[in-house]
Length: 212
Length: 212
Image 1 (cartoon, helix red, strand yellow):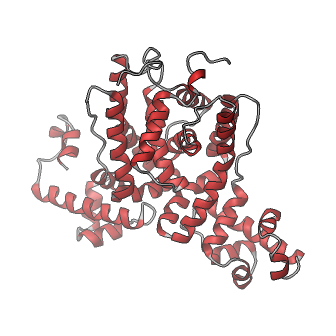
Image 2 (cartoon, helix red, strand yellow):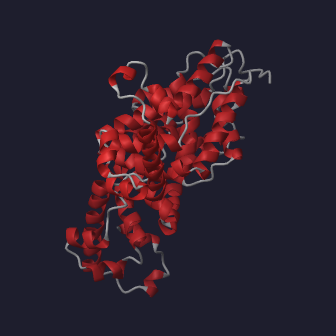
Image 3 (cartoon, chains in turn yellow, purple):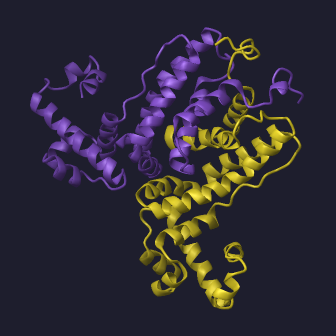
């Protein structure tokens, strides 16, 4: 909540009415109710009516605070899924493993991960939701991109590899196993995947001098 | 259709009634109607009633041929999404790129890819659908695993890397960009990802003698 207020920035101090604790409280109650519904029934099934009923906040009040259903739902999703924090242990392999293990645990345990497939489905049918989802997803990649860029500066990682490609190469297979192949997403997989991407999968004798 | 008849194997020739062209035709019509609905409204929205209405085949006939809604829906999904074919060009990089480009094109263009998020969502709520989805997903990985295992035998790829990890490392990021990060899934990304996974992302001078 405080984040979204900060994000509105300085200009809004003039444009918006003074901060009102009752408004802040009803926002928090609405977001919590919407987040609950998202993890229970997914993005396709949540209506403003259901959020009003669950939160006890009137529909008119909800419409006053969010300009669209998509905006409310992504705001609620943000309260469930916090972007990763970038560690700095001095060893890129350890930094990346730390973030991948956090993602793996979240995919298995956190309510937001149950809502992800329905978000992907709803976003494919709703351009505004797609835009807000892409924006949030970009924010979540930022700490990973920072870790990769720092390791490139330090000479640990190949500077010619785009950080966004590394991000997809490390996070993508975890989402894939969770949502598509339905295989386990555990520490053993994280470790094997990270080693493969860091060192490559070519046979050792092929690595130094590729023949093709 | 002929595939699913073949898959039932020899024993079924005794267990099932003789092949009936009217049954085969109604099966095909039902599967086509169900596939259409899946790509339009997703797995969450397709009911047997809607399939009956779209296909013109009676609900009782549908229930006679499929033991559950989940089984009908996965059968219909199979008619849309054919597993990849394993090429054998003699060069593992070319074989893998061929399959990845096919997947990338399909994710962007094919109706089955529009149904994937809703399948992931529905499978998380329905254990039978989850089991059938995992089984189909396993079949789709088989050709990729075969290409990797062959390249390991030939000494092109590191024999210590599990083929299932390679499969997730190459296919996962494509699904991730399509469904989660909503970034482009194009030939440039396929090429960059494949190079990263084949060669590793460590800085060249770190690759031969890792310090940690």
